[in-house]
Image (tube, rainbow, N blue to C red; front, side, top):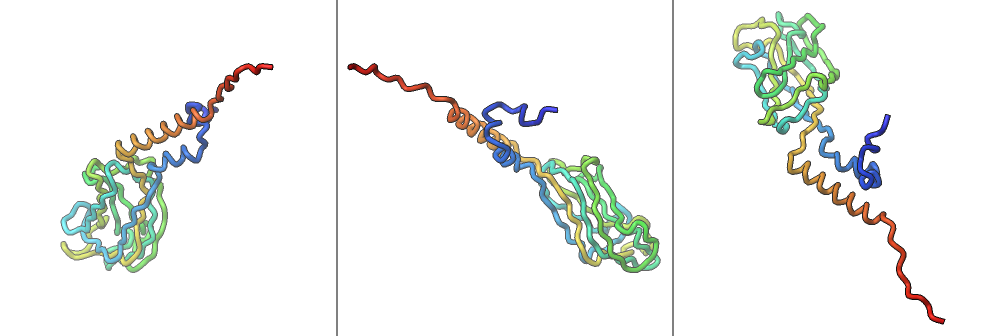
Length: 200
């Protein structure tokens, strides 16, 4: 199978992988960390009173993974399995829900951590660049307005891949093309110098 490098023009192939990687640096992954300390879990997803965060991660930025390390507390009769967090674009139509303590059907306190790959879900911020995060309950045990549980400490860490702005991407490509042109001209063999015949 031919490599990506074999499909590049000769002048760019001569630049070497370092410069090509440098030109693609705009597509590198970044991380967005959300501190969950003190967030209370009140109602069902979409209910008034839930904690909702809107974080600007950049227009059309893609979500690749979620890591979490949290300490949760469920107030009886609510269970740890009911505490959940949902996230997606600000429109709310592509929300994904995570219940860190999904297997623990009891009240009390627990520590939870893990990682989930999100690439196959195609999650991304919309044109407004906002990542919407809502903390809620899978089942409402307490009276309206009363918290069923709390995120005592920890963080959610989203691995994201920003989409470069068109102007930045165009400028980067123009720079690579210019460097390739200069490198191509430098490597061309120089014609032999013409000398005048010697007289004896």
